[in-house]
Length: 560
Image 1 (cartoon, one colour):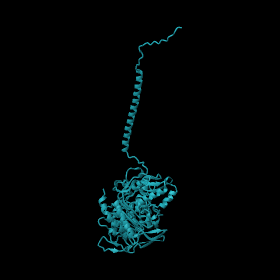
Image 2 (cartoon, helix red, strand yellow):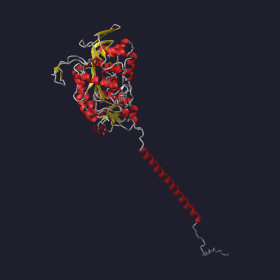
Image 3 (tube, rainbow, N blue to C red):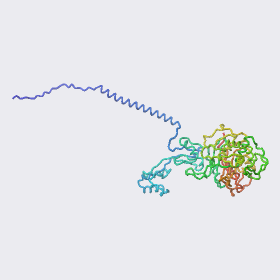
């Protein structure tokens, strides 16, 4: 048996295997990385360019005044000297959502500790209704921290705009009010509602805080002295229509944001429509001058004490008025019959045209919407007669101010305004009347204050050369004239070259037996109001006002 052997032969071979780096693989990897880096670089460059571009746009945008879109924004309002009349500030209101309250009993205890003066019986009722309600408006920073530290998710703070009125009552009728959604509902707040919401600029008015304060203070004092139902005063520049002061009483505190329904709070300076009586006689005489029908020394002879027109009796207010008067004397003595005769010489069309020309009739265009509309007149010979002395014809105090400005400033048209940017430059005014009209009228108005027969001697404030005309008118109620009166004094000063008109009106004043009149000449003081006429009420108020504001006007408001 042959034996087979398994033989294993190991041979040593030269290791011919070798690894060589592939250039092709390396190139692919490198190119891929380079490409990614390149893309990243390009994106970075584009992004940087975009940032630079946006930055330049922002820079340009900052140089352009763009409308503000901030929710509930309203621009501030200032007087002509930059004093704030209205200021907007952010505030926080706290509301409560009852359905989210964690522990009602605990919450009420904590709220009582923070706000002890609230009516919690009412608050409990609101909590039981399960509806969201406002708990505290304009919360103080300290109370805000306290209430938020309670950690109750039912408490919801809401940031909103608060409108503050630093002057309180002082400009209530001019500024007006806003509602709970910060929309204007009266005055400037309403008329300029849209502009106040979008402009960054302050709204600058023509009024002066200091002068407004002084005029209001005097008007308030004499409203009490003469127990008047209300009153109003307007101080206006006769050359450009800038209203420096406009006061109406009674007024109200704008910060309280109460709903005013009492008609006694009407703006008597712009909205109230009244018969102003004899202040209209100035317009009758001025119309006669403008038509070259009369002169100051034109005589009217044999003037009757009483005349009739369709059974309506027209009388002189005083039996001591002479029967022979010049035009000048008719205005100085405030003669009714003489004024009727001048009106008759004018005729309906010329007189009506004159009143429309100076803006006394028709609706006046003004900066706030609360303006009155004079009662339309059915003109005829009897209406011409009564309107000539201011009876049976109505207008607003603002329109009286405009009319007196035009007949005393050289006959130039003006537009009364309380907005600084709306003032018309002096050289752009339109000529309405012959220049000699003002020269003649101003001399007579001055004599009404200086002559012993004049009705406005109490306004002869030394140094201010005051001129003016009084008006005492009976008030018509339910179609019948009553014993109640509207007493008005329309003043201009200085009378040689007027700068200002001051119109003062008292609504239903009464006499005062205790008031002492201190005269500006050597006459001894007298106690008690002898007559309930403008000469003893509104003229006294105007004189006291001019004494107080005159020095300010002389130093602050010099004509250019």
